[in-house]
Length: 212
Image 1 (cartoon, one colour):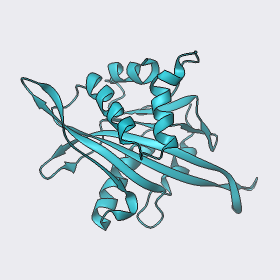
Image 2: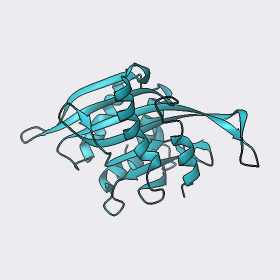
Image 3: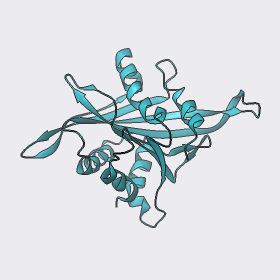
Image 4: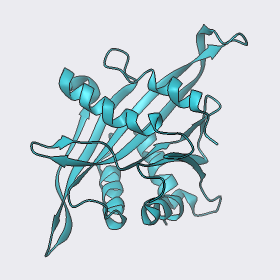
């Protein structure tokens, strides 16, 4: 079960003045009757180089995932523990996290495997964020103290509709990796978001949890 307070703590660093994000990457996907889903452009930029308006928009998209209704829209799942995990989605996401989204080849693989299974929208954006949260000490009295317990590096991915001049809307699907559990990184788990908990993207979820 996801602790709501953990997610709220994480979102407190998702503001324009105190952002935990250092990079955002993504692609725009369109649908063609002849060729199917196709990438209509990609980007990869340091978060600090965005305009104030772009920062605000991107923060709203990214924050949707951890701020979602916990244990309903946002649920925690464990990756299979087997010998092939390094060649699975777990390995891909670990690589994206460790390279801080600076490896475009890994990002392209992520886009392609998502496009293979996600059929929810005719046009959508795949947005990927890299963030770092310096987890502060929290005393037994619940007060924040100086110093750090752990550095939590993470990736948020959001799939959202877009329109007009690539204006991205509210995410339909997404995930937070590694899971943020008990105020710590749990690299064996992932938090997956579905905007409609009664209509989950099961094909995409199976891909994330079992892809080889």
